[in-house]
Length: 355
Length: 164
Image (cartoon, rainbow over all chains, first blue to last red; front, side):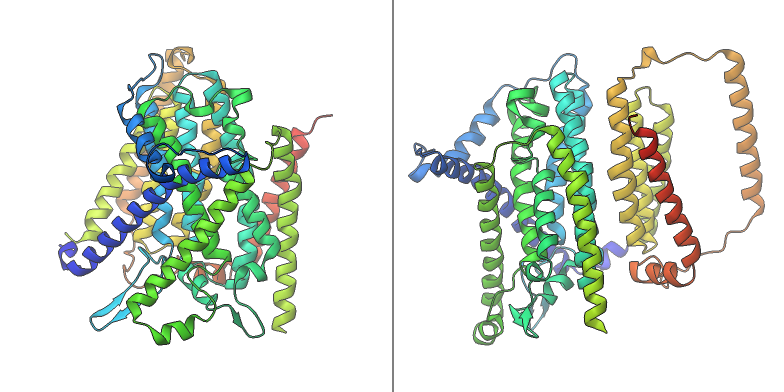
């Protein structure tokens, strides 16, 4: 079998990388819940969680333990198989995106090149887009299978919101792809090398400010986060699509949201803020060991991701929730035309610069 | 068997059994889910042909957008097995005969044709660069005409959906 011919070292390398990324995303998501509560506390002039451990740092573990030991309830009139499938899908799609993100530069050693990206597919961005568009199934199936009208309404809201904002997101990405000329995330990051080249910034944020803004707003909507958290607005829908869920299934839904937050921050950092690149990286690369350099790069990326997560949290605790018609108007009547204009301007600028 | 054959047979069995699941399952929501699984199997076949762009577009457009709308409508209509209308015997018989006749024709056609074997290695045609170049040079007129068709369909949907 051909499977046997593939290098064992290659498989081992990828398995280790996947494990590290998986554990990393789970860890970051876990502490994102703690961070969210601390941010909320600071913004509302409270103390926040401070009982479990130093600064409440053990709070996520306590929460997880609580969810594990809760009674597992599956409603009598629910569609059992889909009720269980819902949270599984939510978790699966949340974790899948991390496969194409380059977490650091290649480490060149004597025995070969170690890549810090699980899979360098030539259609990296489209892969992310595909997984994002599948992400809505977890919410939809869970909400429908619960056989509860609030859950159903919430899942329908989530689905229509996701579909509406995917369009603007896609068009804003098209404008960016016109500049990069590649769909591979590795190429896109490599093009943003350093910080300053050819008398201009290399990061896509400076080349596509409007596209970045549209992408950011759309990712708020895709993440179901405030100010677009219509699928779970307590005042209208109680708890939304996870109303009937208990125990670790509820935990999966809540957790998947934070993993999504982490991964989409990583995607934004990769696409618009240069990924693992940082100013004066060539000088640093010349001075240190390649492994240490890769570690520094990964650390830079994580720092950018954490800044973005904090930004998401600040927005959540600052802005009030949109009304549903406002949400739809913003998506269809403002963001999509804006994204189209951005695409036309980008095309014009590319033609003008190239001639 | 190499890994390609293993994957090919796995995806083929998955595609056919999920397609059967679409028409055999009682609950329309299950049918939609089986259809999504079928799309995934077909996308897997595209990847085996090194047509990654087609594979992912198949997932984004069909599984990610159109099937969500299907699911949406089915959930809102709340179809159940017991509310499904029972067709009378004559219609069922006619359906079986016409379907069987079509099956026979297709089977006869496939028995006599020879399908040219695609070289497994030398196909880069499904990669986005080659696909884009082909679409915008060799097939630019059909491509533009089909996009105009899409545009008119969109405008038509808006006109129909607009309140007076």
